[in-house]
Length: 226
Image (cartoon, rainbow, N blue to C red; front, side):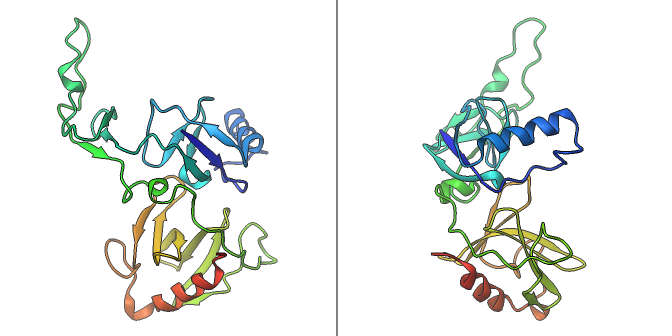
């Protein structure tokens, strides 16, 4: 299993002023951006990857995944052990009977499969199409201009050219836009991307009366590079 590191990676903390660990992580990403990196498949997660170098890489810094070892597998919600799909309960709790060893705390917890609905790169192994960069502001060259307004919300583009942030004074959504399926993959810099067909329905929704979602989708479609 390998991951392709984003050219425009994002790592929290400052490479210049951070501690030694932060600087080392920045240096690792700088040295490996645009490269295929081998993953340690003994530590499979929905949204992050442990490389053979011991560096953890989140979804937001990955452009594509090949030979995904998560397909057909699942992870125990208690102890995190990886299982083949078909096993409904984790048996790890039955072990630990050796003297002085405490049994695992999962106690037969359910196994959550890795699927297209909870793992972004199983659904999109090659990532989403890149999008056109929005014009940058003079005040802050790191982020792009809030040139698109949708009700009380404004749109920004983050790091990778296919990541957007929609926000107002009360709510913030970070997402990737899937033009083909008209789907937002919402998340943040550390959590798994979750597919949503609408930001006006479901948990943490926007009021439809003050948000013209079809206008936003149409604008995002114009930004997609096919």
